Length: 124
Image (cartoon, rainbow, N blue to C red; front, side):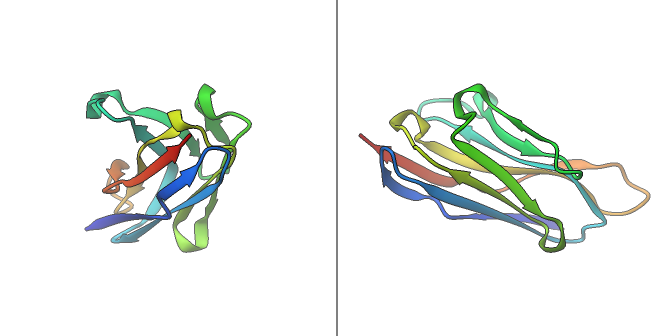
């Protein structure tokens, strides 16, 4: 079994900062890309948008709306991915989900795993 557990969400005023963490645990052979997606209020699961992702070699990719404000990083030794969010805006309000491509053995391909999500609320 593999688990992704997010932490660090909460309420903040516009212009403020938050740092999200996501730790993977369980039967992990290797972790590929890790990242963050968000689901805004009223949106369906299929409408989750990419916030940021980072490959196992630390190549990063960001959604257009967060470029220059958010920074994704990872600690491979701790199987953890972080999201530093600065200059937060009300439109950043969403549930933020951690995602990781994880292989549970050398004989199996990677599969996507999701965390339960952490709420971020940005007030104006």
